Image (cartoon, rainbow, N blue to C red; front, side, top):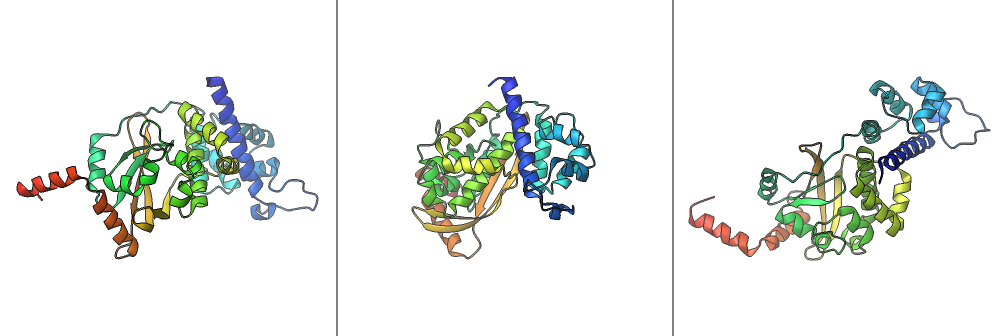
Amino acid sequence: MSDQSGQGDHRAEIRDFLATRRAKITPEQAGLPTSARRRVPGLRREEVAVLAGVSTEWYTRLEKGHIGGVSDDVLGAVAQALQLDEDERDYLFDLARAARPARRKDVPVPERLQWLLDSMTLSSAFVRNGRQDVIATNHLARALHAPMFASTTSRDGRPNVARYIFLDPTSQDFFVDWDAACSATAALLRAEAGREPHDRALRELIGELSTLSPEFRGQWAVHDVRIRHEGIKRLRHPEVGELELTYQSLDLPLPQRALHDLTLYTAEPHSASEDRLKLLASLSVTPADTVEADRDLADGVG
């Protein structure tokens, strides 16, 4: 992809995002007078401009993708006029920062981070990048997400959450709330595309999903964004049955602008899901782990 093509894609992203947010706000919600002769479902550009305190010409130029150099104060006024939620507001600011690109590089996961993952024995923990590649895990995460790790959608032994959800039919059985998983995953990728419009691998992934998955095309067209990822996840595991788990994602800033997230899955204490998660943890212990534990005990460790 050329830089010129990437710039065009970025401007289209800004245009479509602002236009779809504008269409969601009715004049009544914005406190504006209405008339029976309106031809648009949401606000007009000139109405957003009035609410944001800028000229119609300026806002029109912004909605066409010319966002570089726009001040944070003005972006904040536009976000308020469009009644953006926190994730959508952050996404708008990410789009502005990406218009002045300093390209992010992939970096290896530090060894100390793998130590952290391995120390978590009753929580599933994995690290993924913005493209939804899983790049580090603990034993329980591999056991919990065994269908994804076994999927033919993996590339070079590395699973990708988005590719698994949208391209592997087994994901519809694994994720009890598969539609919600589709929506959240597409929104996470949309947010990453705003942060990193020049990431060729990300663009290729989005193109692949758009070509092969009608569900992804539908979700992508909605232009929803999601940055913070937490809640309840219900999984149907082939070995231990259905689990209801809480999950939380935490940002992991790394050198060279790399930004990964650490995702943790755990069960409510004393619940049936906790019993099943403990069973899965015991099943995921490998012979090598057992030998090492026995050696530690023999040496008086632990």
